Image (cartoon, rainbow, N blue to C red; front, top):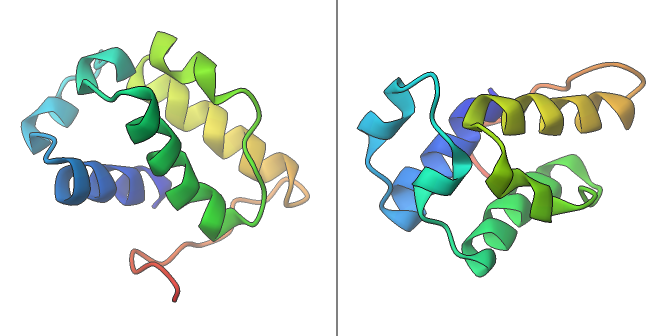
Length: 92
């Protein structure tokens, strides 16, 4: 679910080509996100999770899959090892 939330955000808000996500080796740097775009994307996640992700400057150096795994691990760490269900709709 987290992956779909991030993809939806990037496609709908940043105009990212959905076909990019078909590449299993996709690098975050290939998404052409500037630092503000990265912060906004992470705010989208942090708003749903209720905590701030540490050191987001490392994500552009990762593959998209590595970034997802890192974010999921951080979420699980803050939720007693669980990955909560997220709605695709952002809460208001």
